[in-house]
Amino acid sequence: MLDTTHENQKDIALFVDSMNKKTKRFMKYNHKNAIKQAIHISPAYRDFVNKLLNNSALKVSPYVGGSCRVIEHGTPGKMSKRCKVQICVAFDEMGVFPHELGHATDFLFGDNCSLTSSVIIQDGKTLEDIFNEEFNEKAMELFETILDEYMDCINANINEDAYEVFLNYMPKYNLLQKTKNPKKRRELQKELYDSGFVEIYYQVVTKKCFKIIEQKYTPITDALSARFDISGLLFRGHSFIYYALRPSLLVQEFFANVFADKISANHTRFDALIKLMPKSFNAFERLFVILYDHIQNNKRFTDLPLKVTQKDKKEAADAWLYTVHRSTNCQQGWTNW
Ligand SMILES: [Zn+2]
Image 1 (tube, rainbow, N blue to C red):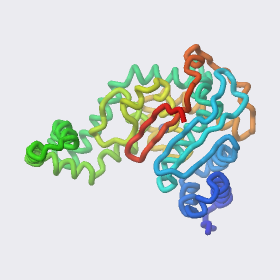
Image 2: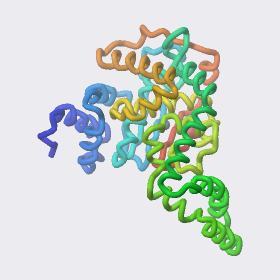
Image 3: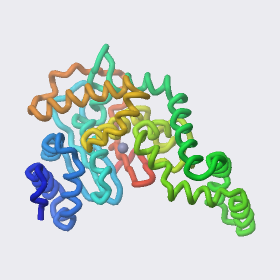
Image 4: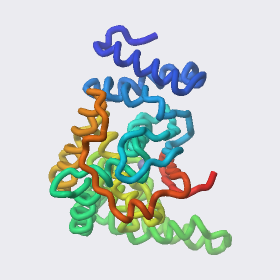
């Protein structure tokens, strides 16, 4: 039963109905999650999300994590025909669907005519151009700012040396995961225990300092994982290897992360973006306004000024793009199937 006290029940009902149609039988058994997911979407954007969902080019399937696959390629410089895209999402994790819908929206006209790399926002530049310029210039500064805050959070919650021990012994902890020799394992375990790492690690996990940082900075920490090895810091996101596969993944993930926050009204992260990456956030907002206007008013996208580069033509994909985002780990690969 729907929550009849909820003032936005009509949009929620439409969302659940759209999901049922998209996912066929599955949602009947996940009705509660569909309602929770609808409520998770900001009331201001439920109608917009419903319109995106109801386009026949978008396929939605249940999954254990999240993924977005471009089934049909577009043509660089042409935004006339919607391309088929499939998203697979776990509906028990509220953040997965908004993120994957962000990717699907970026790829409305295919991965080789993505909104992020094609639509000119200002001065002949796309969101990708603006984001890359700002991120490349500030990556080190962003890394230091966020890690300083993480250090303060860990030291204040555990003890004043905790962050140093946590960071210094993390490589040995990672080594322990790979070590099979029992004697070597015992030595590593003893060292980790004696140094205080084991207790500190436990406290970092239970006190969730990394969640405090993620709650503020996810679009930035995710992008930073393309430049720095932050795998031992417990932040969720993609990996260095993932981002190395294709340069445009960086802005695509930024767009999907901020899009998810936008439609879920997770504005706490916007404060950090406005402060630390104002040009990128402003460019995102301008692209989002264009997108929102076109979807809500049922406009064709053929009026938009587009940037077509040789790179786009060269990268016109010869395989399906398949991005997989798991709850704690994310992978991406090119496949031929
Ligand atoms: Zn993603």
